[in-house]
Image 1 (cartoon, helix red, strand yellow):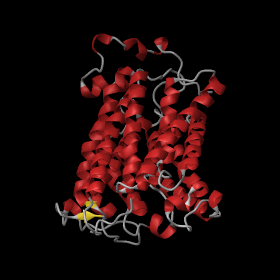
Image 2 (image 1 turned 90 degrees about the horizontal axis):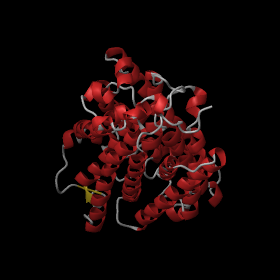
Image 3 (image 1 turned 30 degrees about the vertical axis):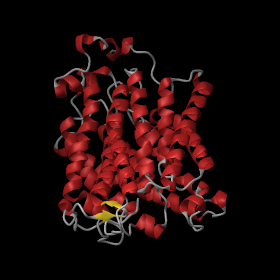
Length: 437
C-alpha cells in the first residue's frame, strides 16, 4: 500500500471494482470486531463494548477527513516522518483524481477503514472499565498522534521505514497489529486491572457471538489483505489465498496447544487461533509463498496461545488479549518475513528472506521496525492516556464497573428480563480460559 496520491495513470475499472469491494469488506470488520469483543465480555458491559467499536468509525472518519489522510499519505514534509497538509479537508482531490489506477477518493476510503479498525482494536485491552467519555477523546487524539505518523512511515510517500530502511509490511503488521497491541498494553497500565482480576471468573458470556464475530473478521480480512495489492491482479489473489491458509493453520495450531495443555479444544480457542493466524499473515501475505503463509499462521496460533497467559504472570489486565494476539501475532508475522520473503512475491532479489537466499539483512530490517514502532506507539499512547486520565479520568468509577457499564453509561441492557444475569456473578460463572497460574 505504497502508492502515492500524486501518481495519476489511467483509471483501471477492474482494479477499481475490486478495491470498492475490498473497502466494504474492511469496513465490515469493525462491526465484526464489535461482535467478537461483545461476546467475550460479561453480560453487563456488552453494549458498551459494541459502542466502543462503532463510535470509532465516526471519530476516526472525522480525523481522517480533517487532516489524517493528508498527514499520512500527502507529500513527505519532514524526512520521511510525516506528510504535509496539502490534502487537509480533502483539498485538491476531485472525482477525476487518480491514485495508482483507482480513484483517489476510493484509495483514501480504503485507507480510512484500516485506521478505524486499528483504533477499535485497542478497546479490547481495556474492556469493562473505561469511561466512554474518555474514549471519545482518546480515539481522535490517538489516531492523529500515533496511527497517522506510523502509517506515513510505512506506506506514505518516502516514509522512512519502507523507503529508507527497506522494511516490508504488506497490509499492516506494523501499522495495525503492533501499533494497536502496544497501545493496548499502554492503556492497560494507565487504567490498571479490572476489579476481581485473577480472582473472579471473567469468561466470555456468548461464544456463538464470538464465533460469528471471528467469522466476519475472517471474511473481511480477505479484503483487508487482498485489497492491499491495490489492484485486481496476481498479488491480490496470492494475498487472499495466503490469508485463508494462515487463518486455518493458526486455528489448528491453537487447538493443538489447547488439547495438549488443557485436554479440550474449545470454540473460544478456535476463534482466537484463526484471528492469531490472520494477524500474523497481515504483513506477510503479499511477500511470502504458500508454504511461508502456512508456517506463519501455525507459528502465530501456537505462540499466541501461550502469550495470552503472560498477563497473569506480569500482572497487566489485557481484558480481551489484544496484546497476546495482536501485538504478539503482529511481531511473529513481521519477523518471519525476514525468513520467508521470496522474490517471486516481492519482485526483487534484494528483498528475500533468509530461507530463500537473502541472508540476515531483511530479518534485521524487520526487527528494527518492530522495535521502533512498538516503542513509539507504546510511549505516545501511555502519554495520551495519562493526560486524559489526569484531566477527565479514564477509568470508570468502581460502582459503575461493578454494576455494569451498559446500565450506568448507556442506560440500556443487552438482555431483557435478566435472562443471562446469572453469568455476571462469579458464583455462577464457569472457569475462565485455562491460562491463569
